[in-house]
Image: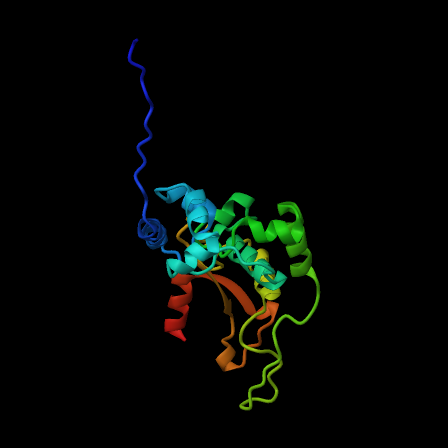
Length: 219
């Protein structure tokens, strides 16, 4: 009788520490405090499903690796809007759903899908929020100047209005993240808040970090 071939599966057992170490490595290489499944899937050594099966959930694995939880439940609209503005500011354009996988996005697409069902709905909701009228900056509680009408920091809504008005570019040099991704934009007071300038649309401008530092050095 002819000898039959027999298949034997050789599988190296991956330890918990190897999985956690690779999670930490991806986070360190990308400069992240949290790693989503999609980001790990594009950069990790193993299938993220292996990690989920091993630790019970993705968040449980992140906790074991001493990383921040990636996929929170019941994230507030304010935080989702703030993340959208951060993306818009970094990109210099309306963000796409795929941009949620970038390292400067706090959330993956899951919280947006749970809250708004579709990416289009999320963007429409954010724009409607940003365009509504309302208090743009909190009233100051300063005891130094009781005549102060606004607080120092512009609200999320006001920041978006300033950046949108200035076409997401620096008012001094024209630098924009859309042209050069390394450009970082700031919303700055034209008349310094310390010198009595109010936090209102007319007294705010978009500056890149380089121009903003240069302006500060001359004040």
